[in-house]
Image (cartoon, rainbow, N blue to C red):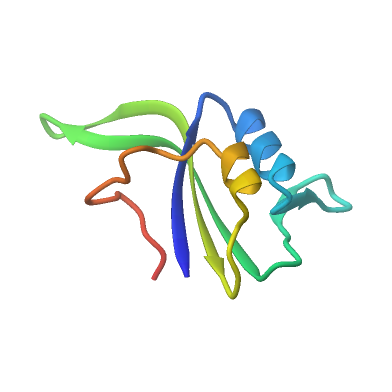
Length: 98
């Protein structure tokens, strides 16, 4: 099992990168969902990152974020190259898979 932390500028760019990597597809309703023949893909669509400053909720990162969990297989380097992986990996991510 491998978790990837992704960041792009927009939701559309995030969706396009996941589809280009071959780990997501549009369903009949037009929603982008995790789909991969190589194993299981779970996508946590996050969006902007919020935090608290002086007791107020503020945007601390306006990029579009998503977390991807790969289970039961491994992505190829070509697939990984399509993703906008956060480097370095967050030491204490704001959201993780349970």
